[in-house]
Length: 94
Image 1 (cartoon, rainbow, N blue to C red):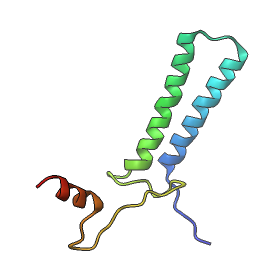
Image 2 (cartoon, rainbow, N blue to C red):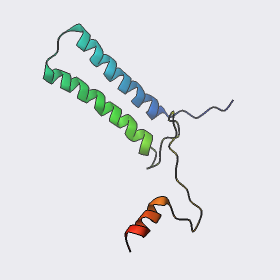
Image 3 (cartoon, helix red, strand yellow):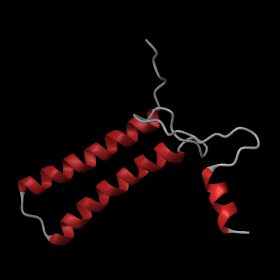
Image 4 (tube, rainbow, N blue to C red):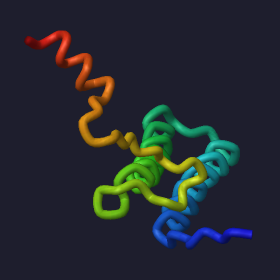
């Protein structure tokens, strides 16, 4: 069995995001919250989710986090081969 090294920052960000949403859910169930308070609760959860996604995409010196559930695939080309974007630009721009 292959074991992946664990990224501590990813684990912390994931736990923070889960905690934010469960706390917001708990507060919403306990009492009636105003529209503005609900917005603040949602904003905190989304801020933590954004931090998690940012880490997954560029969290390791500009490279994707290798410990994500779905690893980010890099597009690699052989020397001399154009990517589809380069082919598109070559046909549009003379």
